[in-house]
Image 1 (cartoon, protein in one colour):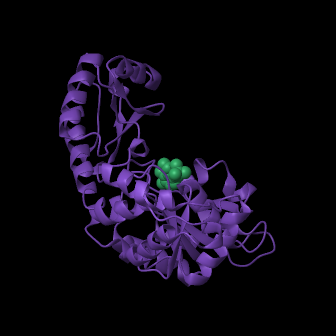
Image 2 (cartoon, helix red, strand yellow):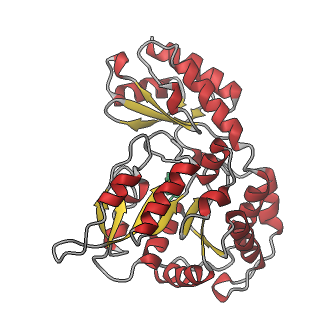
Length: 344
Ligand SMILES: Cc1ncc(COP(=O)(O)O)c(C=O)c1O
């Protein structure tokens, strides 16, 4: 039985074109700034974002951490961050333990922050309070099920942050999904922020790699911080070669992943005990409420595993399913049939 893997878009494998590009990439020592393929990818990434410069890093987590280290000017400085964001929940607390930030939580609803709450979270200077200097955003928002902050709200959040003297970092691990879903250019989101991290290794199908983009000055400092944490890579053109293919050929097809997520959600809603609000399906991630089955999250996952469908937990009430280029319409149709059989 073929396993149908809906766990994450991080499970994507490189395309044949990527493997060819890796095989024939021109290489050099990137710590000496001598890898021409890395230089091409960084120039291309900066151009796509409409920013001055970009930097290749090993992962999204490293991209966020290096960005925060670059923004920070001393231990105990505060940042505003959504407690359901990846930076807060899923990065080992690096924002505090390595970058030295004190996090001030500001909760999102359906993955979106409220500009008024951003404003209210910046206290007047007072010796009792840490002063926030940075706002962290995440778009699309993983934990809420790939929800998109629309460009007008993004602009409002960023202008509010600016009025209160905050710099802005955007965790855009899936910013291309957000931009494709919102029908706007990714550079329109990037134009509002000081730094953005985006992943090559998710829906864009690269085997490894993420990018940070920002001003030339920011990226120069980020290069130093990347090296400090051991992220200077030598013949990194083998990673960059796939990244170039991703940025040149893999962005527009993300709309197929979004369409397949909708198809999957519609089908799941016909299975007794499962529920996905359709207005929550904006990109390639769906949170499926299973409370109607009367089963625990682990029990649902085990039943699906038995029929060869792999998903992630969103305990205690939901599972998460993510579409990618390996889970097209045929795989969605087959998964729906198997899930129905497993839960009946
Ligand atoms: C929103 C978000 N940011 C950052 C990351 C971290 O990326 P990586 O797994 O490459 O460290 C992820 C990974 O899923 C993510 O969903």
